[in-house]
Image 1 (cartoon, rainbow, N blue to C red):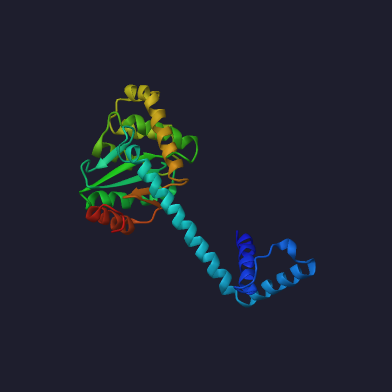
Image 2: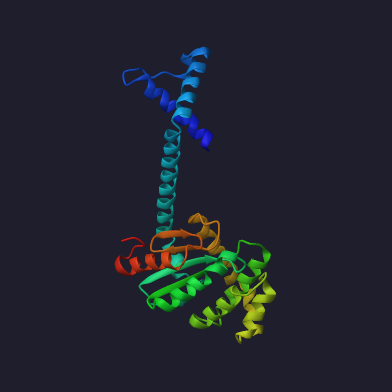
Length: 257
């Protein structure tokens, strides 16, 4: 990428060196000797002025991030229905809260486990927050099986009860798969016969497929990823940053007022 940017900058540099009154010229109009001389001039200029190239790279990076953020904001608006109020999702916290935090997570994600205390603290300190949990099993077959169990568990456990199940499973040590998820479900008093039947329901598959489609639309390729207001927040950014964005949503309806 940097090499391509350097070539692009070199072309722009030549245009600037040619002066404002110079007629546009194509590369074919220069002799090989002239091309070599121009290349040497540009190389020497960049070596003597590395901050110029660094500034161009920084500007391009900033531009790319702005474009990506705008695309994601547009996707959030397009996906608002299933993103914030899908029949397949788990809703915990205050169902009538005036700020919603959506988390895409994987039960085998080390960073999701690390972010769990932040989620618990937000649940305790923000009584007007609704937390939406989206199973996004991207770390292998075990994650998929755990997500299937969790999705089926939601037919029996709701609100705080499901949150307890979620905390026990995500907070467990070692790899998480079907066996571990079923063990936590049994510990929580779930009807296991019904659970095994529900796991084979088309609704479970439909719910996971919905999340995968949503993640593609939002350009999400890792966990944890959060959506708050119209903003997509990638990574375990910590309690303070999420709380600040939620406070803004409470205040003005946007992650940044």
